Image: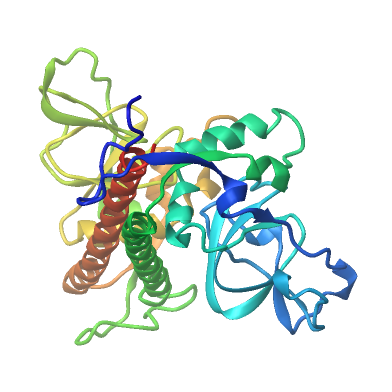
Length: 382
């Protein structure tokens, strides 16, 4: 009989893996039936199914319980692997890792840390296809999502007998998860910073100077129609063109490459029809389809600054259709915004360009680590 082994293993661990039911290593325990009318605004936070999010985190608004509950086992401390047993996130696994104490509400399952399996390893096992496939088998299509601890306890997994091997694998995935969490926190912080600065580095309605200004600049900003600062150009059909190395863009981004170009000048792409509220930068040379305008700057105006203006405009309110969202050149040209001198535009553009580069780098890192984690979950488990 062929030994049960994953594709990728750590060195020095040669033992085969064995099948075990979940109830024998970390049985799932339901929560305490708190009475909702007794929830308060202070006390111990209660984890309810609504606190288990689609991204696998525990958060949102908590209810609190001020009394000591009769059974200590429903107090969550330290690292707790939780499962939503009903509701919109049924089957979603979440890790609660906190020095604070929480109470476990009914329909929130807790995988008991019995010491029979490394807890970080267990967290990884519950993110594999082996868990997902068994979960899907017990979820009845079309029915109100609902699972029982008995069903989950019957799930079977291949795991190594060696706690040291479990620990090595669990430690690897915990490190990956910590890195992902760190990058996601940084991404959120930089996205929040950008949103704040977009609101403070541009004059508000009725004002001619911003709340926050880069050092060395002064004077009032001038109101301009976009027709005064840029050219709105139409895209065209590309089907008559041959394959090449010039990218073709639509409202959703890159489509394919052809042998001709519409522009030798960098521009902003904005939807004429369909997705009209997601402007993005276009690096020349390029071609755009007829549902995507490309916007170039007139002399005396900075493209990246103009891109910031396009990101601030709520384009959906200019939708001119009753069906597929649409914009016209005239509508875009009539939009009014405020512009400082060209040097100040360039300085503001450079500031936000650096911020966008940071945001993009964190998004790329997150994508890379998520891809790596997905691959390792495939190859390091059976």
